[in-house]
Image 1 (cartoon, helix red, strand yellow):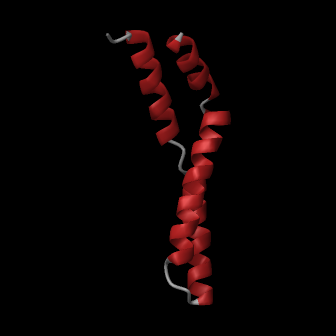
Image 2 (tube, rainbow, N blue to C red):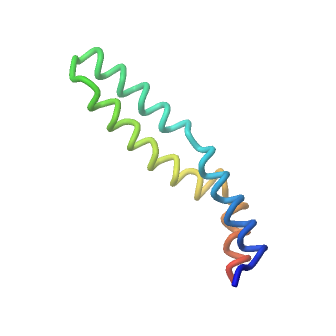
Image 3 (cartoon, rainbow, N blue to C red):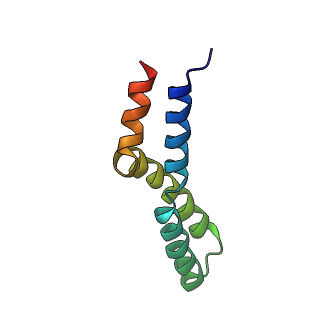
Length: 77
């Protein structure tokens, strides 16, 4: 059975977490600069983007989307 409150909380949390892109973008930009200046290709850019994505997820879950996380926990009980 579906709980409408929990579904709404899950949707809000997912939406908030997917809006967190600043560290990924920063990682791609920094990696791109390193790749161009050191002539190492796209590996630093891809690595920076992946690392930034993980940081975005952690930052969103612990800081930016804290109210949505708490709402999700309350709805799950």
